[in-house]
Length: 220
Image (cartoon, rainbow, N blue to C red; front, side):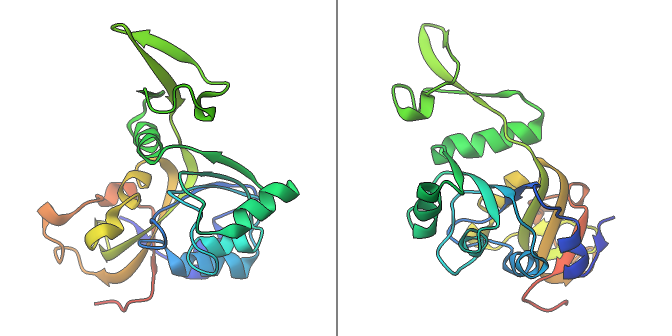
């Protein structure tokens, strides 16, 4: 059963220099309260794997704004001008992947696979330094699986056993990332009792969630 802990305890589980997956897309589904806790604790030198770099002053973008990341592995950075600024200063390394490729690499990490084959990116800077191979006469780019030490995800309803229901589009990368990290901390909008989420509505089974923290909603 997942353990309910305080935000302070959760932030203490994320050491400086950790590789962290952060769920959400453009702030939708970001674990905003956990981001606040990391900022308050002062964690730094993070390698962040996420769908995007967020927006300036919002969601995980605030970690970038505060220079808490040393590397980003993302698919989109256009809404956070601090990314380009820090790249030009030489303080931030950025690896850009097509969004579908990023999702599949995270999925592969959760499934225990070594990587994925994709034609996307062939002949572009995305393919520089990467292995390619031919399969049934077609060329593919080999993208390695992505795995993290810690995943920070966010669910709408999370029961005390760690089962998660996501509301609408907030599922996005949260569901994939919950399977692709050694330690998973789930921010819950609402912490509910076991049985409150119908089995067919559980998107992330509790077996993947190690810790739960109370987010911006209220326990029910």
